[in-house]
Amino acid sequence: MKLKELGLKEFEIAYKDMTLQFPTEELKTYETFCELFKNPHYRLFGFYDANTLTGYSVIFEYGEYTLVDYVAILKQFHSKGYGSKILHSLPELFKEKNGCFFEVEKISKTNPQTMKRAKFYTTNGAIKLDINYIYPNNSGGLPMDLYYMSFNNHQPSTNEILDFVKEMFNHLHKDVKNIDKIFAQIKSA
Image (cartoon, rainbow, N blue to C red; front, side):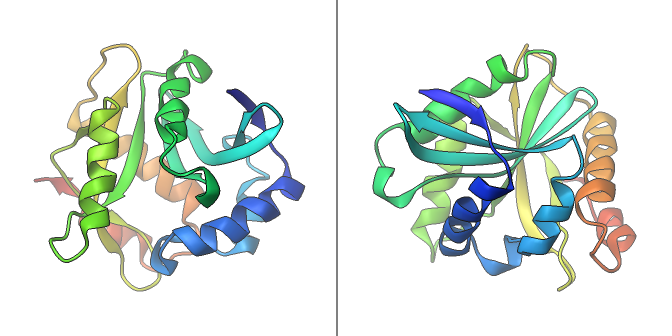
């Protein structure tokens, strides 16, 4: 499996797929993505098997940590182990970082996919953090869980987590009204 940084042309393919795989309340607009990709800390990666794009990930890097803002496998390649391969490639790709955060929808008994997604992250080495996390959007925010995968056995303190989240909000969610109010709701559970 080969990892390759992609540009805006390839992002059009990824964005079409994102609109099918991600809930609208979690998805940024195409224009917002294009603006964010001007920031060198916000990058799009494609994952290829031979010369075929199988999946993609949008990653934000800042300080000692990264955030996988979006990760998905193209539908025709689901259930073939590509998602795990992507997560296992992150420590090598970002070896200078301490670890990676993931925003994951809360488990719901009425939606079995939520349990499947949470299990995907924990099976691949991520732990659910004891943080009351809210994904910022213009509807007032979406309660989610925050997971963390260590790259070098470093477990961040609550202050390190909150500092990273604050920076992430400042970089990625400038268009969200009341961002400070949403951030103020995030705390240790």
